[in-house]
Image (cartoon, rainbow, N blue to C red; front, top):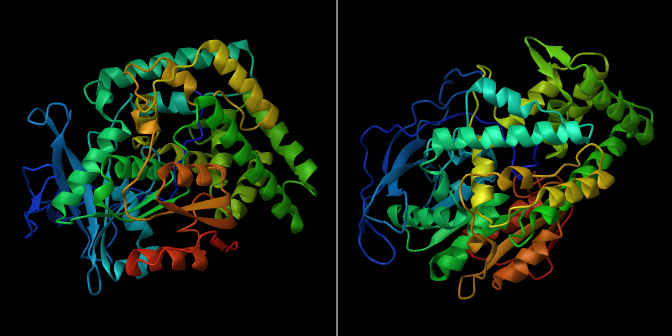
Length: 502
């Protein structure tokens, strides 16, 4: 399975399950279109864990977890159901309602991430209950599983270099094995994990919370989910913010090349920032880059031992990509690369594990399995081998480090059919939507922000001039101020609004 650059907002995962004690909500709710819908039953979160797996002392005992039953197949609403896992951080002040968050992916656990993001959301929480969830096919919501921890170690450690026939054959064999394991372990849910169904789930969540309209903050992939929701339910849109937006119309090739370009630009910015001080990986950008390229080439022949594991070239490049999502992790990336050049690969392995969702006990979250499951059913596109080679060759010309065939190779052999329905958005008739795009975003390049804004018809674009994937949680007081003013007071940013780098 070739490494793919998932457009995920990376925040430290903490783990939280939805195993509530009986504490039902008091308000009733009705599903859009008629019919009664049970409210969410909220109770204590029983396993919000630190990354080392230990239960921390809860600083905020008000946090609640819950579950909501939804149809597996919306074409059969009275048929089999699945449970969605939810988390709630109750409002600390005069409550306006609820805000639902999706932090990206596709495949990121909102139940894990909201608890970690809480400190950055203090202003919003003063007026709203903050809600997030694991979308269908993610973690506790019938999460897609594709083999054991050992299987996932094998898949995630595959080298992407050199881009020769032997590498291509290993990749194709791994893709087929991975897809077969996904079908074996999660075949029942695979046809139903797409964004169109997730948007229907989102409306069920809105109704179960007792809200007449959906207030929503979507980041990265969450912008596509929000856009599809606004297309399906324009009259139910409340205050919606879409940060680090995807252009849902792009092809596999266009997405791969745009993201490759974005990560290469972020990598070059990292190198320039590094050498402004005494950079430990090279005295100037060209030397530093040559040292990194030499390291990657050496790892294809001889991986570095990290405990009982091997830091391969595939894992090392994944670790570099993981650190480029946020400017705040650049100093750690410098140290990780410096260590690896000295034969110590632990820090790069740590970065790779944070990206792939590998836990200290060797098990994995569904981060790397939910991503292709949702991606591949959200498009009918199935590239041919010739198209994949063309994409890879073009990507490698942009970046020898990050160039690859993208996720098209895995989707080509995916066991569930895809549909293009989620690739078309038009929110005509909705309340105003705020789109926030970052000029230095590696995973969702800025060019996608004005495109999504235009497709939605009812959106206003805010441009953030800084680095990193996602602007609202970047530390930018300007972006946070504009978003909070809209969410709390309904103040739509002025046309052409721009925020400087944080």
